[in-house]
Length: 386
Ligand code: UTP
Image 1: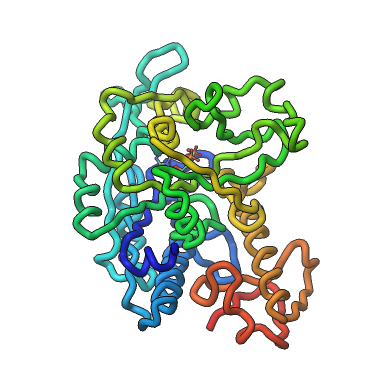
Image 2: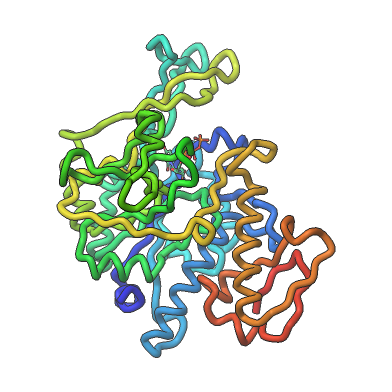
């Protein structure tokens, strides 16, 4: 069902890529980051090639030639990432995509404030500003009239995701098929929370039968965070939000039209460039998931963390969610795919620290690898490509 909708041109993907990535500490947009895979591919390239792979799978499912299916890619940037992102795509020839299937648009900014409520000054004459959060996507879509653009193209469903997940399944046909089958307006992929104190937001229903919404870890009482559901034996609040959402275009229109009435800002304590160097201050951010309570119908779709979630948040040397940890998650998953497809691995460094990488141009989620892998031996680390 998902592949059919894709081959009918009903799916667009929307990348949230306006964040400043202060924790990663790179001056380039996060999507340009090379996490050290054998191929040296950036996060943008991995995502672009997954789109190319889904286009091919959708064309095959329809018995048509590659090139007959095109998925439009909307990329939200901010004044901090826009120029560098566009140049990166141009200099890499859109990673094999057609230039006109990619549309860049910018989100807005909002002044930063100090903890005592004053504006932070970036220079003696200029207020420091930051992007208005990934929920700024709604007003940015409205301002750039891109929902009309989507309607003109015949798009019905929009897959929205964050840039900083090395395992993200962009344009996932399975998720889309589930979404269409359920007939809901908004859905999110979730992974099981790893441990009670993990710093992730969780999906909850507020009140019995109330709307589905996300509660940030900082807002969840520690006793509730570790509460157990007696029926399932799992954490009571176990569905972690990993910024993978599917919306109908109708719902996006509804949200963007109701914006002025319902805008909520969250306070995020982050490093802010100021006239006196970096200082800790507060950014005002809207979150994409704040729209969920307004959806007439919603669904969650559980996916396996090991297969779909490799966050790149912090610089190497930090304890978690680093480029190094994300690279290992990719290599481990892909090594399992290769072995399952009948391949063999050799390695001169311990296998827990290495593995093979499968090019997204060969396989989206481990499929179609037998002809390439069966009976062959690969020396890790390496990239397996056509
Ligand atoms: P994060 O909340 O991790 O923020 O973004 P960040 O800016 O990337 O990193 P830090 O917190 O400064 O270290 C989650 C996703 O939302 C996007 C990011 O690009 C990432 O894909 N995002 C975040 C935006 O598109 N706009 C924003 O204003 C903030």
